[in-house]
Length: 380
Image 1: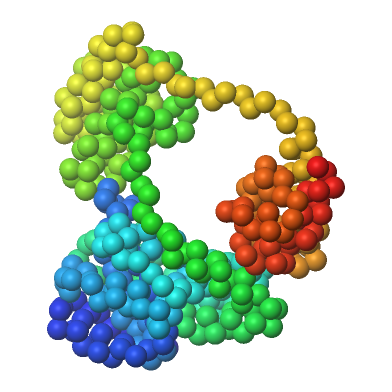
Image 2 (image 1 turned 45 degrees about the horizontal axis):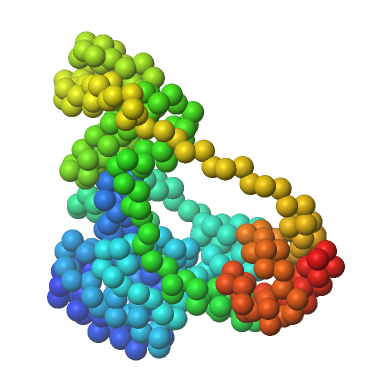
């Protein structure tokens, strides 16, 4: 650790930290949630580093985090993350914070074709730091936090300002700063999108659910909804209340007594004593549902083959892959397949037409546009 780690867990020490950070052109941020332990997504730590200091901020102690939102929204301050997506979604969900002037070292590493784009791989390569994996699934909602836990958390930001400098220099040398700048602009649009399904369909997200019979689906739905309601009330990760494999076992071989439930692997006698009656009630609701009301899996209509469209997609992939090899970039980073399919659907005949395709970045039109347009027209 190049600088001492400071725990900021009181309003007065938070204000003092903000006074020190004021005017810093670069601020690295990261967050720690506790999704392995808790049901509700929530920020339990905010790690902050400048070139001169590193602090771990405890939201449970400092209270109002509005100054972090102000910092994120300030276009004069470049905020650095590694893999900002989830952090930005959590900031949006919990506080409504929105970001400006971002730099994401993971995206930068992708556009440099780094063999390892995880933070651990980059820190090992550029700083000789070996990642400590002891706390990857730590319960960050628990207090007090140990010294080793604080050091682990701080390790996510302490090198980010310098890492940003290293990666930016390489991007400049390759002429790709404009490319990543547009990618960073798109990060500003990230918003929390979780929780879209209702109780009638949410259970269908479980892998393997669509292979069940309708009665089994009814039981699975009741068990799933009971588990989610219980997990929410207890603020405990769903699998800690009842694992998916147990839900499926009970849906396919339902039991009707506490004695039978206690013999089910993953429930046991303790589970049957604590929540057995609730589990049996959920199974009973699924068994009692009239046949006419049983859930039904809606099968997607088979797409009608379009040989011309498929030919355009394949032509675009070949051209994209050749360019990716030439530029030494992963094809999916240079231009994802979904974007190629959007081009094939739109059938642009000019670069101006291409500019109207929402999936295409400005830098992609500039760098790849003529070649992709040629491939599209040639198969039109």
